Image (cartoon, rainbow, N blue to C red; front, side):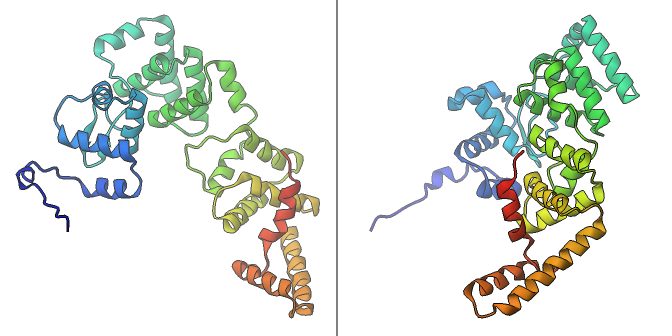
Length: 323
């Protein structure tokens, strides 16, 4: 029988791993994320940078940044240094801007104008860390000044007033290929004011931006069908109930079905529900001995609150649906 012995000489050189990190790595961390975190623990207090970690593991800097963001729960770091602590890892993902570098940037006319515009939008002087955020978007993300101004206008008009949220939207635009003001306007144009309420009703993450196809659905509901948020919210509620996840496409199937049935107000939906329930009750009573009847009854039990299978109703609608 092969024996396994723990080398006692190594036991004194121990690492204390926070419980939050253990829980996170057991559930979610992959190999590279776990290796980088253990390396951070081992070198706590050292002057670590993304570049030095990448060199040590022979990873790309982007791989290291992704791993650090995985461990980052609050993103409150002020430089590329990764510091272990109660938040697992704090990491900003962007370079620090020295006083001299900030002064050099602000000396440029377009940056100076950008800072002025930012203060006008915010209605107050912007703080040093907020200046760094704007410079990061302008310098590292490569957004021209007019695009940053539009970003500020867009975020504030959508009640995203924190610079962390503004930076998050900027990253999303960057990943979507936005590099110019024209591209940003194309991405955000014609977004119905009800879009945010729909995203919230379906349970999407607060910072998640809708894609064009999703915007088109909501525009159809409000402009072509003329539906208000009372009907739209009801469809969103039934979508989450039926699927267990946010799906604008599924909600569109429900709303299209109502539109085809000439629904104009919530009371019409109640009538439609009752008609559906009555029809299926009669069909169930006349076919109790059939196998399909038993299968349908089992499905109906998934929707006790309305006593009918709305999921099955919408499958045919969704098969025919096109954007």
